[in-house]
Structures are given as C-alpha cells and as structure tokens.
Length: 236
Length: 283
Image (cartoon, rainbow over all chains, first blue to last red; front, top):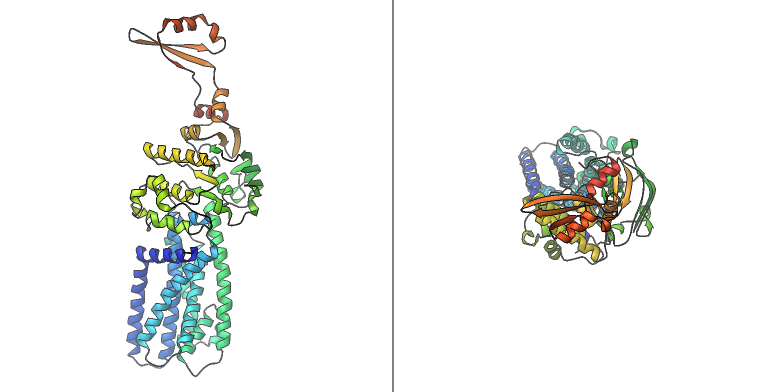
C-alpha cells in the first residue's frame, strides 16, 4: 500500500477511535433536524435556507476535524515522528483533506436527499460542497498552526467557521453575492445555489474558477502551515 | 559520517543554545553528547535531524551538506525521541506499519523490530495502554524500521527498568556491529561509558572536550592502585602510586604474602571526569 493510502487509513482509524466521527454525526443530526423542520414550514426562499445551512455545515466539520486531529498528533508526539520520516507533506495534507471532505460531503448529500424533494443538479452541488469542504480543511491546517492546545484553539475555530460561512448568511440576509466575490467560499456557495436553481446558469464558470483559485491558495497556505508546525517542534 | 564546523544556533536571537561546535563522527562509531539538562545536547541533535533550521556553521552528513539533503535524508536516518512519539489510538503494530509505509527502501518487518525491543507480545495493544518505558522502546523500534545508516538517539534508556535498559543498550551495540553510526545524547554516564566509542562534554552550549571514555578516565587518573588484604577477617586497604610500583617493597611483600583480596586501579568514573573538566555537575 502506498504512503497516501496508509495516511488515509490512519486518519479513518483516528477519527473512529477518538470518537470525533461521532461528534460530527451528532452535529450533523442537529442540522438535519433543523432542515427537516424547516422543510415543513414551506416558506419563501427555502432553497436559499437549505443552501446556507449546507454551506455552514460543510465548512464546520473539516475545520474542526483537521484542527483536532493535528492537535492530537502534536500532543502525542506523532507529528514530530512524521516530521523526521520521508513522509511527503503533500500526501499528509491531501489524505487528511480528502478524508474529512468526503465525510462532510457524504453528510451534506444525505441532508439534501432527506429534506429537498425538488429537482437539483447533483454535479453542481457536489462540486460546491467538495470545494467548500476541501478549502475549509486546508484553512483548518493554517488555523491550527497558530495554536498548541485545544483550549486556545476552540474559540478561533468557531470564528473561522463563522467567517468561512459568511456567504451562507449573506444569502439568508439577502445580501447580493457580488459583494462577497472576494470571499473564499463565495465560489462554492454560488455552485451550491445554482444546484437548486436549475434555470440559472449564469456565473457558473466564474464560481468554478473562483473555487479552484481559492483552493489552490488554501493548499499553498496549508503546506506553509505544516512546515511552520514542523519548525515549531524544533523550538524555532 | 558527520562533520560539524562552527555550529551555532540561538533560539529567537538570544544567547546561543549551541555555540561554535566543531566535531566529527566516524562511520560505524557510537558518539555521545554528554551534559546536564539545558546544555544544548538536544538542540544539536535537532539541527542534525533537520527539525531546527537557521543555524550557522557547516554541517556535512553522509558526504553532503545538511542543507542540500531532501526528504531522502530520512530514508537513511533513524530518529528516536526521548518523549513518546506515537499514535496512542493505534496499536504498536499499526504504528510501525504506518511509519514503514513512507520508506521506498526495504524495511524490517514490524513484528521483528518489536521482538528486538521486547514488545512482540504487546504488538496488538493500543499505545495508550503502554507505560512510558514501553513507549520509549516503541520509539526505538520505529527509528530502526528502515535499517538506518545513521541513528539519532535522545536519552535512549530514559525511564527504562534495568532489564529493558540492558536490552536497549545491547540493541544499540548490535546496530554498530551491523555498520550503523549512532549519535546519542545522554546525561547518564554509565550509558555513555558502556556504549560510546567517543564522547563530547557539552556545557552551556559549548563543546568542552571530546575523547574516548577510557582515554578520558586514564587522563584524569591519579595513577594509584588500592590493594585490599584480609587478615583474620579484617580487611585493610592500602594505596600505592603506579610509578615505581614494581620496585615498591611493601607492594612486593603483599604480593608474596598471598593475602591480597582485590586490587583496584581507582580510575575516576566518567562522571567524575566530567566534573573535573567542566566544573559542572550532571543533573
């Protein structure tokens, strides 16, 4: 098995054995409950509400799980051991982002299938969700590189999740999306919105391109953050 | 194997943690940095296994400048930390399989390495159930999995009971027999004395002295022997200087009387030499 496959397997084991996977499922269950309750209210703009709640949840799990797993690795000393091994940094980052993104993506697709009975574009939805989840996972690496313990990490983690979810609240508050074009998750948000609005195909390319550019920026920042954490093990 | 010239490093631009270290370690040698806590031993090691950058001076390892090595450096190097450095939620076997997956070179079977460190029976136990000593041995197992040519050990017998400390010391000696170079740090003089071909005394970031433990002890010896004789159950001890011992009448008499119980050369311990050379105690 390749190093990448072992890294994915290791993350799966860690998520399961630490109970993080259950925490995530409980949060998801709450979201599902809210969304199912809201679907019965039949209010105007329900699609936007679903899109916003999806964006919020899809950024929550990756930031939280990446942060917690890295903090755990660092406190156990395993991160130091990884740093003096030939492990490729990109594989470490990619495996974790893939793991938490797939987990998050599966939850959100399940949520949509459970509460949304109208037609939607699975391709646009998956692209938007995957973009937001990957980006959030990579921002999780960046965020956690500034903290050494869980207590210090928790509040900034909530703040980061809120910030990454801003385009979602903007949709709920009726703020035009063009004002948030600079935002990292504006691209994924636009893709998610378009998934529910099958007639609107304007701006699909821009949303996709923005998502790719921000994902690349997040990947560079995450890579830098991992290097920074490795340097901090040494004490510099 | 390692050549360091003028190695200097300061954390945050403060007083240098290591200052102008110049030393070399030969291939197949066990070299130890000895010193009290805070002397700079671990800092020097962290530089050598590339966890610390921003140092000054030249370091060449395995024929190449340290800064020119890429990730392939760790294909040939093994690092054993003093503190536990394993995934606690994984078993010992899972940990070793995971770490061995990163190597492109042939690795030792995890079960075999666990056997070496006496953890074969605990292979399927999660690390969170391990004692500190077991975790230290698992650290060592991980550092050996790629059959490294250069092995860095930070306080390798710290926290081990005498039996397991013996096992670890034998394992380190076996690595040298198989051609590996070992660079270790310790403040345990017995470990250094038994294992190291040469030691370097490190105090306040400076390398005060380098030499073979036996040579250092001889150098600081008072050249005295203590002869213990037993007469009617009472043990007497007399001391003689080594100079002119063959012509010392009293010593010759004791030899001829056949009452000698023991003769000790009274060489100082390595710890004593360290204190004499550096004026510091090992904490």
